[in-house]
Length: 214
View 1 (cartoon, rainbow, N blue to C red):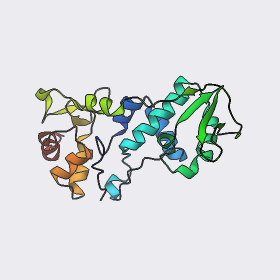
View 2 (cartoon, rainbow, N blue to C red; view 1 turned 180 degrees about the vertical axis):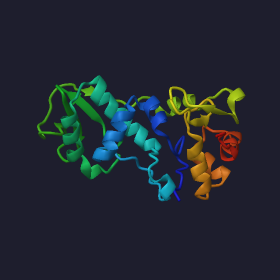
View 3 (cartoon, helix red, strand yellow; view 1 turned 180 degrees about the horizontal axis):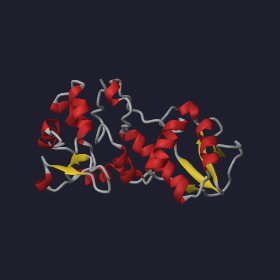
View 4 (cartoon, one colour; view 1 turned 120 degrees about the vertical axis):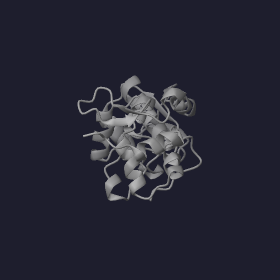
């Protein structure tokens, strides 16, 4: 069973939440996970939850930085791959573990071995001032996302824009079946809330007890 990290604002984030908070598209998230460029850090051991992609808070920071480099600084994806290889020794959260810059379409980092700013793809030193990449106030963004109208707590709704109208928890895009899968896997209501602190206990109980009308 996955164990939540109590040191972050929210333990787990769905794809929809990650898209809203980082600016990375759902298509990019799925491609990067399949291509192993960026794999979600939260692993689901239960078979019913194995296909569910959940991201940790550190993942959000990394993806926000990647999004800034890719979409705002216009760095090519091949250049991102080179940077990942060059910084692989820092671990999976490499993007958030070091200060990155962008200079003439290249990713630059502070090399502690040389004391210089170097391009990740060539290792060449960089002179002058580069554009620093910042992640923004992710914790504030997460807290803002968590605010929901009290009138929708404990209610189930149909997902907007979905042909099948998949049941979701009202005011969110969290599928009811996801909460039910956690419950079937042995998670208590309190355990599920640790994974989704944006939900009220009433939301979770409503999802567990929900029975779709045929």
